[in-house]
View 1 (tube, rainbow, N blue to C red):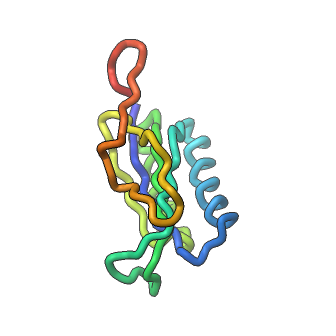
View 2 (tube, rainbow, N blue to C red; view 1 turned 30 degrees about the vertical axis):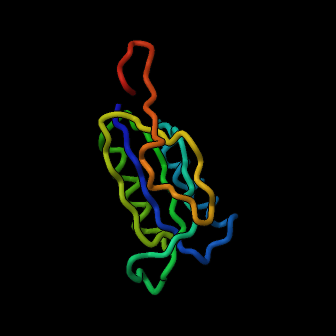
Length: 128
């Protein structure tokens, strides 16, 4: 299996319903490709280091994904580039699935602390 972390920077002007619609769109793409969404971590609105498309803040969302085929992540990347509600996206391939253990708060959460991450293991003892 192929594991990915997909980071999406959504426009800060989106409402909760609009943000949920964007996330739902990507979950549907993963489901259509017979993949799995293991977790979605919403880190909240944060100030950007530099201006992107005239926006100074963005809503950070991290999706932990699994696909049966390596080429399936290309559809996620394509959809992220075409959606105007997304300022920037990044997909990172991982060898092992590493999920966050706690949810970050929506405003001012410290989502960057990797010491709280844990690894899920399968019955055979190998990391999934």
